[in-house]
Amino acid sequence: MIAIYPGSFDPITLGHLDIIERGCGLFDQVIVAVLRNPGKTPLFTVEQRLHQIEVATKHLSNVRIDSFDGLTVDYARKIGASCLLRGLRVLSDFEKELQMCHTNKTLAANIETIFLATAVEYAFLSSSVVKEIARFGGSVDHLVPSHISLELSQCFSTISTPNSLPMKTSIVQ
Ligand code: ADP
Image: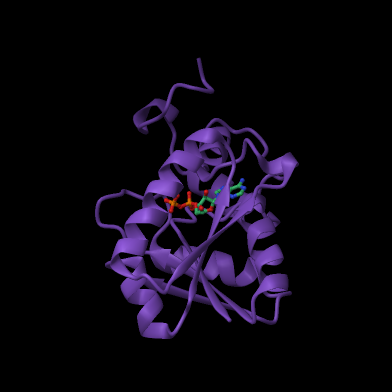
């Protein structure tokens, strides 16, 4: 059975990687699919993210990396996947994910969404949290694969004034 793990992965975190590794034990193949979303302004380009994921998952033999645009269910049909893999962290994820799952069912009744609960140690972890810490020079070595930690520090070291970037206020206040 082929499963798609769709998302932004901007960048991939150890929380994402945990879901991918566990998905690999459940499915014949897991396709990590980066959504090309014109509505979002990512830190890393799709090509950078594809490369980051490729390096992070090179120890897994049944992972494929791809990108797509448009509806996830259309992409799933195109590549013959019957499952969408998603991760759940907190209650707010559940509400959003359940709505998406039901919506996808109305579009493609034969495609199932499978949810994996986050590993406890990554329950707080998101790509946004990682970017906020890295933006202000904090270490993210415990949150992302090492090559991504390096890319984040290189990326933010080129920016002299942190306040010139858009930021969320949750962590910095
Ligand atoms: P999206 O924009 O589709 O939410 P993300 O890259 O933020 O893309 O997340 C992709 C999927 O990974 C989502 O199902 C999300 O809930 C899940 N996910 C993100 N971070 C974690 C984590 N720390 N633990 C488990 N699942 C996670």
